[in-house]
Length: 497
Image 1 (cartoon, helix red, strand yellow):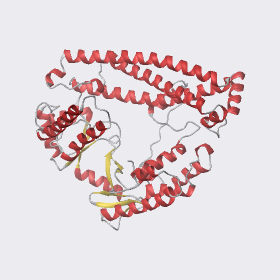
Image 2: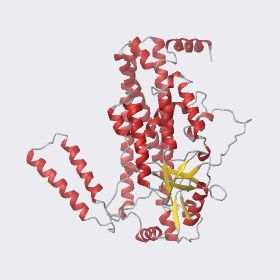
Image 3: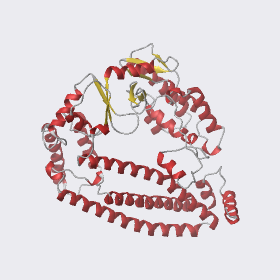
Image 4: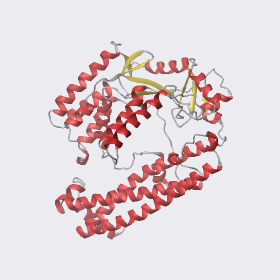
């Protein structure tokens, strides 16, 4: 680094100390109006670079002759979907989307230049450099996520394209470690993947019709374009569509089926086979078929470790859920709402009601010898589910490292090492057996608390230390889960999910 750059960095550090936020400094030094201009510049810069990233992704798809999902339209006649005319129409839509994106980039570029010019006139030169660096860092941070998302979508599109062209080998997607021998039709059906959506056999009247009610409610908030008679007619027509589509629904209609009938029938027969379980692998995509007895045995073997799990004395699911609900409600009221640490709206969102215990399941590690299972605990709908999301947002700063030793994705790692000379270095990968179940809960909570309250003052939460520690204990120690009809609780370690 040159002497000029070092001096510049020193001056900026003096004017923007680490223990005070840039927003607070800007308000004190220039006022709220200048802070708003800075935030507008930041938002416009993000929109501008996001539009560039999106356009690059679309051009990459076009060069590979792939059509993004949002540009695929469904045709009533399935035979037309693969026709040259349909492909040309999708290609034209993709070209138009790229042209629209490029126009948006040009407009955002002009707006960003004007906004940065306005900001430059409002602040001093050294401060403007700091604002530009802050904006650039924000763009770089979001850029890694954009790249990861686009890369994942592109790989998915490639797989889907190969499958549609009949080039996908089912055996490369399916890992069958069961005693059941899959037929060729069953393999082709499963090769579509577990996220492949089939029309439901029957619509649920409550949830289906409720969507129309919500639509009607949202429309009632807006001004209707016609007169009163037109509005009454529109509402009646909406009701007619809702009920006629519900009562006339037939999942066996050929226009609804998105796979051949023989594959659809094969999936139905597989769903009736109680001797096997079909699931995704622990890592990557694909389909795994296992004997159900082997699956249950492997998960139960994990639960046999009495240093990590224990069987609940009370096996009544209702009693267990209500007990945890009461604990969470009391803590929210006494330690967060009454002291004014959360708003009334926040309190209502975190308040548990009508919850249930978690559900444990396992994902097979097919890349390892013996195919061990990774335990996953689905906490959706549990007493601490919303509270856990809230606590995660509070402790997130403790997970980031100023040394750059934390990674969000493989793509971030690749970007970090891309410009390094690795000729004299070796890459070593360490694998921890049953990492999550071997995490020491008490020690981990203590480390989080220490980093948040006794480390960098910029990340210190507004919640008292004892309160946050108890919140962490509530989220990871109080929840029970069910597997195979039995209710268990963690003693130590954590489960993914």
